[in-house]
Image 1 (cartoon, rainbow, N blue to C red):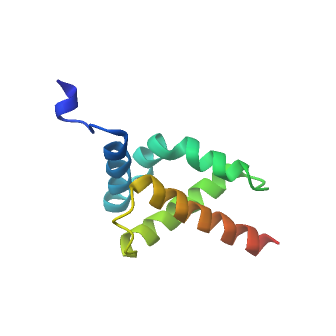
Image 2: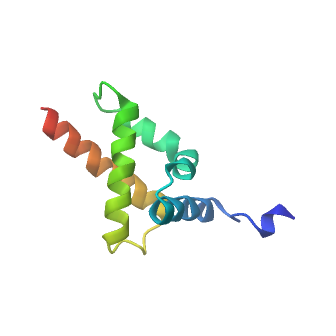
Length: 95
């Protein structure tokens, strides 16, 4: 019965989490869905504090996904691409 009200697929859950981040600025739902992916990507880079890198990536996702024309892409791909872009920017600024 709960499936009638909740996301039906993983893609639905991803899209719902991204929408919550963009509409309400609430990072909790986005972190619940994407935390493994974001931290895994952050740990692949030499960040002294991967948690801070994830936080900065989420802020960047809020800015970029609202204004970008990538809505046709799945939410997970959009989040991963924007996070990777932000991590690369952080590394370039540091080094």
